[in-house]
Structures are given as C-alpha cells and as structure tokens.
Length: 276
Image (cartoon, rainbow, N blue to C red; front, top):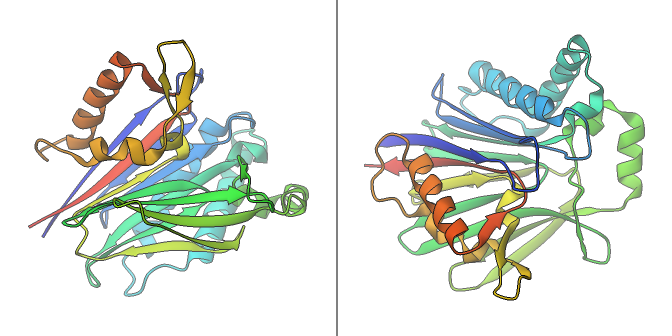
C-alpha cells in the first residue's frame, strides 16, 4: 500500500491576506495539518502557522504510539506551547484564534485519523461514491454561526466565558452522493474524531472556505453554491503523480473563474491517496 500526500491553498477573493495555512509531512508518519485563522483577529495568519508546526512536532514525537493520540491532550499541548511562542514574538493571544485539523495515518491499525478543533470539511471517496462530512457551529435556534470554538479559548478565561455565553453547539453532518444526510449534535468543545478505514481510497480535508463558492448569474447577482455542487471535481485526478492535487485544483479554479465561480474565503485542501 502506497500513501501519497499533496496540498493546495488559495486566498479568498475578498481577503488581502491568506489566513489559512497547510502543511504535509512523512516524518515520522504521513500527515496533513491545516489551520484557518480568524479574520477578525489580528495576525491570525501567524497563529495558523504556529499551530500547524506545533501539531507537526507533536506528531513527530507522539504520533507513533500504538494507540490513536488523545484528542484533548494534543490540543492542550499545542495551544499552551503556541502561547509561549506568541509571547516571544510579541503577539497577542488572539493571534492564535484559528481552527486546526490534524490528519495522520497509523500503519499498525491501517487507518487515517482526523481531529477537528473547530470547523471544516472532510471529503471521502470510495467505490460507492463521494461522502462529505462537515463540522459546523450553530446557534440554539439552529441558525448557522460563523464562530467556531478555538483552542485559544483554553488560554483566555474571558474569551472562554464569552464563548460559552453564546450558547452555541457543534453539528457534525454526513452527506452521501445519493443525497442522504445524517447529523448529530455535540457540545461545542466535545472531541470530533474520524477514523477512516482502508476501504476509502481518497481522503481530503478542507477549511470552511469550501463553503464560500459563489456563482455570478447573468443578471449580476451571486448565488452561494453548496459544497456538494463542487466536490466531485476535487477528487477527480487524471493521474496521481507528483503534485496531483495542486495540478487538479489550479486547473479547476481557472475553469471556475471562466464560468463566474469564485470563493470569497481562503481555501486550503489536503489529500491522502491510498494506492495498491
């Protein structure tokens, strides 16, 4: 079994700075890590990078354990070390207001494990079709909220209390290619972990920029496209050599622009391919 990795990142057309960051590594295990900085927090593009590299370090020294890593221990270690680095760089702790998705492959159990700290999406493809998993934060009345729970709130009591007072909850949904949709609700700070078995050939993790694609109509208005409308092209590769994801998505983004489709939020995507 061969594991191939690749990543893609592109700034949103309404942003001046890309606040997403993504990296990949094979040292010591195959992993992709992405972070999406909060647009309302200064220097969150720096925070996103800090979180990604600390997660990489954590995997380097802890990710070869026989059992999957503890979700809360990893998140706590990352954010407390990020706090020290932010202070040394003269950054406010709010610079660490960023989501984090950590995906890594464990050879001994032959599974890819994905941890979500905040919102984001997971795209899976196997012989039966494409599956979209989405992590979102909602208000008590079910309306969407653009306020995911950040690890940085663990180091700021005031921010943590303010977030708790918002009374938001986490919703994890799964949408199958036939339109079937299942959902479950969880506490805003509850762990969200996906274990993906060997029957899945393609795994993509993405920031919530996947939900920011707009199509310009002939009358000048714009409509928001659902992720289900566009993800098929994300997992259709002519070949899987080298930078297979970058090639596919660079070409696709140009094609989208030609028909009036663009994404207003930053977009980062990481891909695992399993090939025999």
